[in-house]
Image 1 (tube, rainbow, N blue to C red):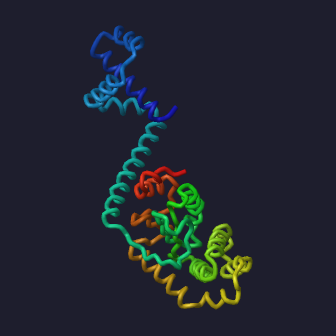
Image 2: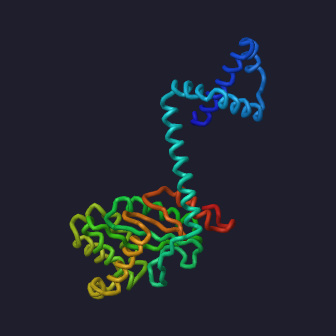
Image 3: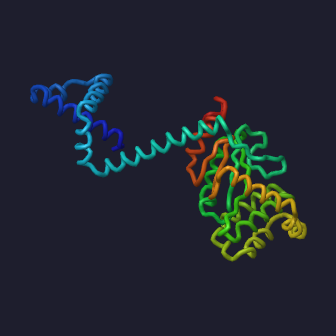
Length: 276
């Protein structure tokens, strides 16, 4: 039985119990079983009961510790959601503004009204875990959302920065192949402990000029881009990965799709408000 429904039954039982104490027990019990209580009366009775006898609800819940734990967990989630909502409203008023240039690889429509900028690390397991979620988001919103991939390779992930260099060097030749490299690296993330050799193996199956790739890996263009991404992540206070900026609003960590939905739907006009 859903938690809320069980909770309602418990509270209704309390209402009946208190009514029994305040009037004839037999008549109240019979009347309760035979008479349909209107929704307004029911809510009013619950509110009155809780205001006058708040300790009774805890006594009832003590009889079902599993449900009590579930309600407590739900309370924590609701409190966290309210804190997040307040932070998002503040960031909407003073948005984070990433540097975006036309030559960055983009997934989704380039002219999309919503831009998700991801600050990521190819060796981070949370970045790998959130990648399918981002694919779901892009599929759900179609031309309304695009993804820009930026780099924040962490110092204790020794293959993360070389992987970032490969991604950007490949992108100088082909956006499509850069995203293919991105997907293959996350698919083979557990092999990255072998170092650069794994990156070379992945790159070797791509449709790019391998000689040019070797040159571009050491280019100033690639070095400046990764350094700028890192500096921007630090500016925004992102000391871990993944982190996202969605039209100026930040979202940090491996979140489910519904958390992306909550922000994206605030950014879209009514015609795009519902994801497919």
